[in-house]
Image 1 (cartoon, rainbow, N blue to C red):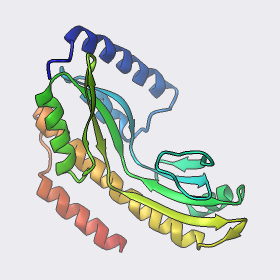
Image 2 (image 1 turned 90 degrees about the vertical axis):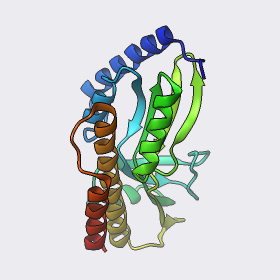
Image 3 (image 1 turned 45 degrees about the horizontal axis):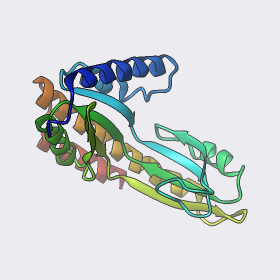
Image 4 (image 1 turned 135 degrees about the vertical axis):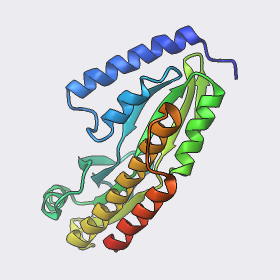
Amino acid sequence: MGVVDRRVFEARKRAFVERLEREALQERVDGDILPLLRLLNTHRDVYTTSSCSGRIMVAEAVRPSYSKGRGFRPVAKWHHPVPAELVAEAVAEVDNAWLMVRGAILHLAAADAKTAYRLVEIGRETGHKHSGIIAMNRGGIFVEILGEERLDIPLKRGGVFISDVAAAVDMANKTLVLAKLRLYWLAARLEAELFGREAPSSEEIRRAIRRVAHCLG
């Protein structure tokens, strides 16, 4: 895997770091993931390209599409638990509505295979089971760390409500909270493994997540 050119890697890293800071000023970066992205970008062999800390979304669609294909239109989204009233307002605008939850997703570039594989391992160890290497070129070995939380609830079809909005939002909020906890676990392990910072052990965080999941029902 000697495909990475260090000069190209450094040039692209500078460009992506500048873009991140520009978008942060425009409030286009999720606030709860920005500190982690900035920290990762200080690592000699890593830079971040895109991310989402997890979200709840109302989408107009006859059926949900993972690839957001034809007929799919985002109506509203939130990166935090949301009141049912706001979701109801968004759903009122469309005839076919879905309530969707997605866990965190991080795209990173590594300068070498060892770093890339370690990022994948940390992702999988923290419950981001769908993590892996997705591409490689002179600018880096690209890793996707993807949370497993996913929820799709049909709320409205043909202008008729087919699900209870309050119950659906309650389920979505609980799913998002668990996704955010999993992101915290990921951040803690990345800080410990890549930067030598003190962090709770994986077992401690697992126990905390189980306690929260039990409380959420």
